[in-house]
Image (tube, rainbow, N blue to C red; front, top):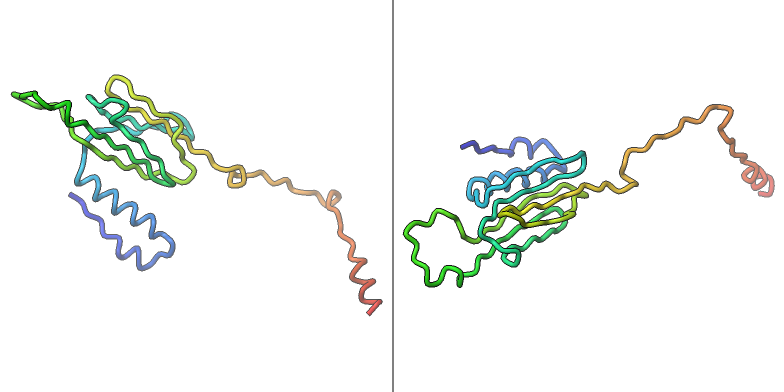
Length: 159
């Protein structure tokens, strides 16, 4: 098991606290929980899909919450489903779960669907127009409009 110590980097960098916290929290979360299994795939330049294996869960037992930079998927299995059953072997995990996914800026949940025991969550990154790269036209010398400074000269004469 690898444990990274970011202390030397924290001393020599400014403004990266959130990144280091994110890496440390993610490492801690991966050590403690690996249920339910999931895939993360990229289906386009700005499109992603998270697929969770949630066999045995119904739509109403799964809650998906999207906050600013966090996607929380929680499954709460109802206790009444297990009442009166005597299992000789229980190999299918039917326990409650909570999965957290840190999202980059401008990533939002577009759709979620549950079919055949797989929960698919589609994500889209939408960068605002003001933050997208822009091509700047270079003006030629003959196209440059010169600004006349007549007002300042007239104000100087009046004073």
